[in-house]
Length: 344
Image (cartoon, rainbow, N blue to C red; front, side, top):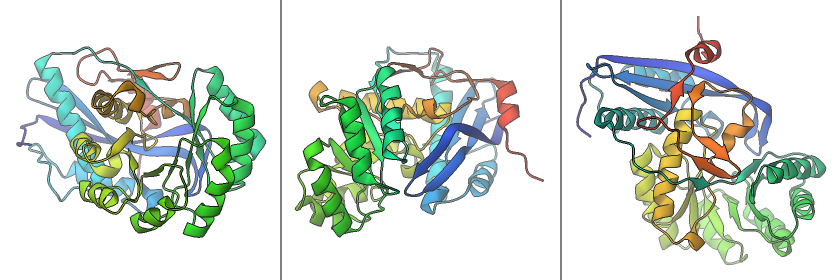
């Protein structure tokens, strides 16, 4: 993308609290730290972007991402030097700005989302699943690898009945042997897919020979090269795409062009959900209705608060684009000030 002359660049780290602690095999979070990027051109048109550092996965931290974005100056260029979260924020803000300058808003179709269930005692996870089901969700993603995995799946299946779609996410917590044993135990319960059951593409290729449950990548699929390797080696046949992980919507489209894809939130704020929703709509348009997978973009339900006055809207399990120009997100300035992370 060519350099764009800007009148202002503003970088605002902030954090949103979860309703309940977010527990996975990777750790426990009580809030999500993010960076809001706000750019303005010389006509005062604003573009919004967002970076979600994936520090639980060993990625760059929020202070590093903020420094990267602050160093952009008034003539930002998307280059290899930026970390994926920073590149995602910048590319999102430039897209939002460009669409607002054109003052066009095409008709946007909603995308179907899955429920996200954090790890816990089986009875608690099942009760959480029922709350999502009552809200209109039909696909349920269970975070496993941090407790009684088989017990959680059994409890959720018993609570939801046979029609619900259940997918698992182990966040690479299982060894090849553990994955083999656990997936054999839950296979009779009906599993749509299992995300990142093992750490590597090579292990996934071995696991794929041992289970009929479709295997989806996440941590192992960061670049289009990773996607091509996974297809070539018959490892993961599906992947979840998090835009802060891969570096933005264009990188997400490249990966989706190689393997079957659903779009997932990295526990994003409202801007990250908006750009993820835009990619999810594009992914859905590339396949038949029967081949579409529910997207992991309903995570705004996990937060107690928001920084948005206008954002993508959930109706049941369907996520609709915000109504305004560009990505449609409008910031609640008072809420942003309240949630801003201040150092020093």
